Image (cartoon, rainbow, N blue to C red; front, side, top):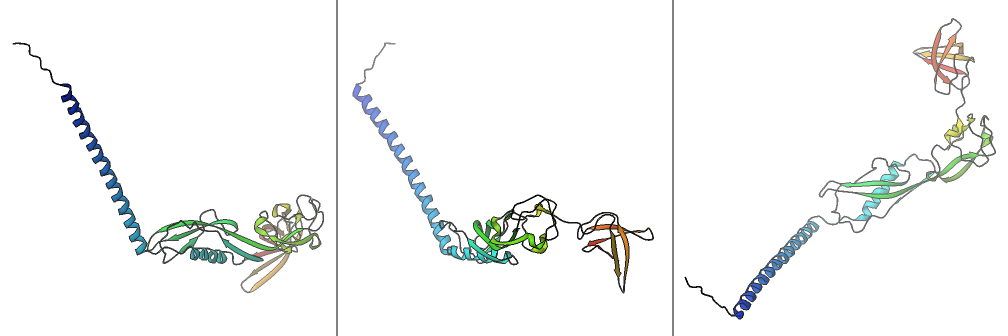
Length: 265
């Protein structure tokens, strides 16, 4: 078979390449345009849904939530000494919360209505949401300090105590707010005048000493009997102590001030 060579003009290849490029460019344009149209459709759909949601559920008034927080904490602090003030922190104004028909305020685990704290705010209907807000509880009241230097082992008297006024939430835990709480205790560590008194600084003084003669009072329905006995151990106020009576019998009772032991049947 004869060897035939075909010679195609260069212009033919150039035109063919141009057509292929134009077709690919058109396809690329179509892909980009489709993506843009799809994205715009999704955005419009989301915006339409949000608008419908806003129309269905009006936006929550955040100032009402602040008022609920204050009201809740004021209820939680009933019975605190002195003057209690509550301040609710600002809630993020950018939050999009549906108006709630029944706002519930609660203390998260680990929080308490004291000093700087965190408060939870929950809604279950018509749209469920939960947020957390900051608040501050201040308690301005009297507390006890040492009126003069107190040496270790000293039994505290009323003259050793002095009241000062301040925010209790800024003080260490375990302070005293009543003279009766500290009076009669024993100084555990020496301290200077003006020291804020705390529980660990003053140990409870036993109301009954080991070997002390005590008065046992037994009471029941329609009777009351008293007898003397000897305490077999020391005991603080309210603790159980064993007492041996004259007959040798050992009875148990509750230690009270003044060498008294109560036995209730």
